[in-house]
Length: 175
Image (cartoon, rainbow, N blue to C red; front, side, top):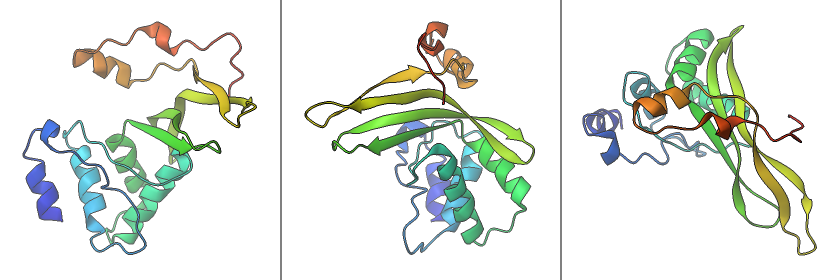
């Protein structure tokens, strides 16, 4: 698997759709590929995307740390967290609601390290307001007021995100 990951990194990132590199199955035949993926993401191979099964952005980080620990890759906990925090820009959490629909629940940015822990900040969250008469979840996606660092990088690559997008609505309660 390490050879495949390394070979793919020589291609343009547009040519390398990575969709399940960090899934945690019951049996991981080549767990070293998780570390290879993070190292590649940390050394200038931008544009990578992967999936992980978790119930929140914070839990996704715990899952990644667990996978690295199970891989046999010997690294101190602080160094592992620094590698993860510098490799990943954002975590998008998708969830299937009680009404069966899938929706984005949050977009969180990894903002670095603080006191040995990876810092996360929510950029957008789904604010659930209840369920209608047909059982459909009611709510809306709201900005939290945090402008992510990656917005500046988007501008460098030709995509301007207006600052107003990140302004929270007046009724935002915070989470």
